[in-house]
Length: 279
Length: 309
Image (cartoon, rainbow over all chains, first blue to last red; front, side):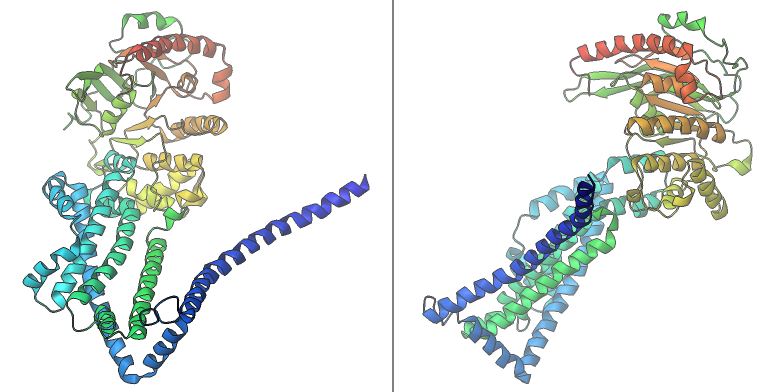
């Protein structure tokens, strides 16, 4: 009898520990696999390159790329060139993103609230949305010239569609009960806009802003491939044309890191702007 | 939009409304111990209200046809009926959410005192499902309900404190809705409506989404809150017991087209409590009588092909 009680007490202590242990094991696994699998792929690549299975001229072994990258980054002239290109790209990105997202959100909210605006702009926006944005780049060059303006316009265009359409659906499909409350309590128009309509649509708006970041990055690199004398896209394309693969990979890594940073910024934006949606 | 006759409608204090013939047999318990012999001033008169919906292929569906009802100041009126009987249509019209109706609605707002102008809403609504704004604290949820009124900051604060404590949430000013239970959120919605000190408090099955125990507790709470806030209430429900416990008068609506089928005074007195009403001998008789009235309508609305539109 007393034995049984002792056993159950011991179990009561060890059970939470057991659960904790399982949880910790899960976290460790997640980290090890998340880092380990990409490293495993790099190792495969390295082995394939050394064994001569893949063409070293286009896919040099990761170790050789890393050595090339280190050599390039230790050269002050090259480093300055890279920073200059990064600066040019980020400048275009920031300008185009801000212009596109502000226009997109404002247009989206307006279309959501005014049926007239929706009737007038809806067909236009929906018909032009599926056009690949890069296809209108020549047109934008004609309109804005070969300089930065045409690239900024292209990015703004791409971001505009993402944010406008998500904002619109956010306003249209947010909880109709919230609109009923606003009407039933005779809440004045401006208060209704700023305190109810926009916050209610915020989860969709943030989704649009996140999608816009990715879109902006694609467009800026593409535009710089096609027509630019500087920028990360130009840096990559230039390296490719002279078959300097290590240099090309430096550009790729910077673009990839920028993309990662964009995703992170998106997550932070989401947590800051809509703290209630995580619950 | 709606005809408002500011406080001049004192003559129209008739408590009876056009009722179908079945209602005439109801006098056996009327006023037996309700003590409501003195007529109250009118808060609201609804006359010949009609609302139709157009179906996709242009057919006309009557949601309300000729509904007339008078609500006295401080009176609790329950509107009872099966789903699809137009009780929600009636509530949406009274709430100002639906302007496509014909008929008259006369609000007896006491605007004779200029100081009271725009200090209370004509009607405030508590909805069936959670209608709090998740991005606002409890206090701000209440504050935005008063955004259309002309109140100074001190008065807004006073009302927030008064009505939050009335619903038993005084310590939750800064809480967010996701930190509260469903019943507590519904209390916030009730406090938000009360804070506008509405001429008419509209409630659309406010307890329907709560579990059975919470519902009983909330019924008791509502009786106390209404008493302390001197509320005039139109309370839509499909729960017969709830209607009898909460209301001074029960209006039974017929299935489409929505009409008033019967009106019953509930004789349990102003200081009733939920358990006292439920155990009163008259309760069972009234409940089964109302059930009879509603059951006929449930059968009818089920028999109709597009009863859900």
